[in-house]
Length: 174
Image (cartoon, helix red, strand yellow):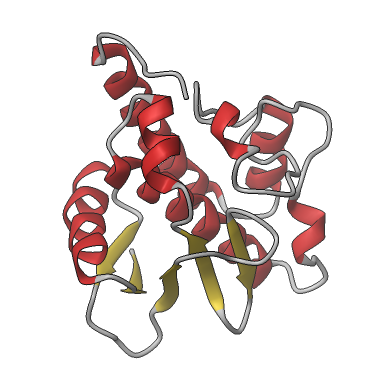
């Protein structure tokens, strides 16, 4: 279990704590700082798109357009945020485990529908959230880096999202 300190708007942090600790077992989310915890910051916007990850700074997740994207995807905003946060934590863990890799090494260009595909803006992620998934090539890459438990947690969250989408009667198109 990896402790994760989440900072940002109090309501968003509380929602992540409840939902994140319920549907996956690898990360333990808390709004209270703990020594050695991974750090996640929920921000209005992140330069370069949806999220940014560094070994030292942890995970930065953009809340820009999160309401619209989650509505478009047919999932609760809290689940959208959780997907973004867990994806960022998987990337962070890969960087922690593999000191020779850099942030840019983590993006695939083979499958544009994969959540791991390189995108320049938050808006470009909206289509990926129609059916959020990780392509087989990225799954294999993430597993080969030693991040198997974190990748499994991400898959649990994505399965929960797909299940939530299947229960949504009709998606709203923006």
